[in-house]
Image (cartoon, rainbow, N blue to C red; front, side):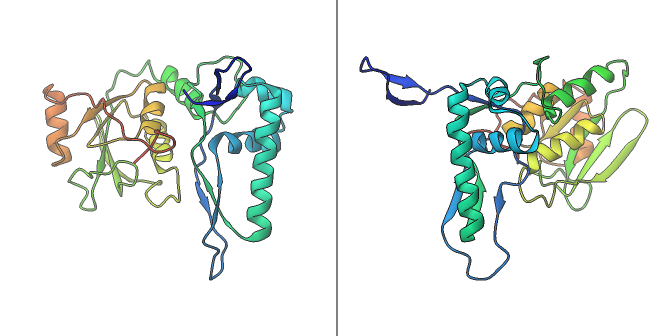
Length: 253
């Protein structure tokens, strides 16, 4: 828990986490020219969310406050700060980075969530739709040779999708992403109908999306995909429980 100014009785006032529905897919913007200024403007993720909701989705500040579960005066303060940072980056040609902040990611389970872009809500809908299909579909990140397991999940060149009838290798559309590769790769696996991911490592953001979709994550031995599939069906793989960080302790490699 973070704290800010005193509340009048000598005790610091706790800072309430701001609910964020959509993490930015691109985390850094740079001017297209030489001799870029070494300074960078840092826009926090919760500041980014106010810009997304108010300027892109058309929310009022009152609606934004209810959505982010904070006071309207806090929304106004965060939004004003975000607009000033954007103006400074655009006018002065600074690099703009989106990172950090005091926020919690939406779990996708709120019926009144008005944000149509919520990836976790989308994942939950897909999970419900495919419950009728009993086939187990396994996904594994592959190296360039399309046989060995890639030690990096989000930027793996390929993914293997295997079920009882088919085995398909597909290019990873998030491999060259500027930012947010973990979220994009996770969404790709969910959209392809994967039920199980076998991987050496995984970031928290991606793990959250898999959890919302009802997917299981297992620890790969880091050898070949064929061995991982064999070990999975034999019950020799353990569930992956440690996820590395990215945004303020949430990540996606």
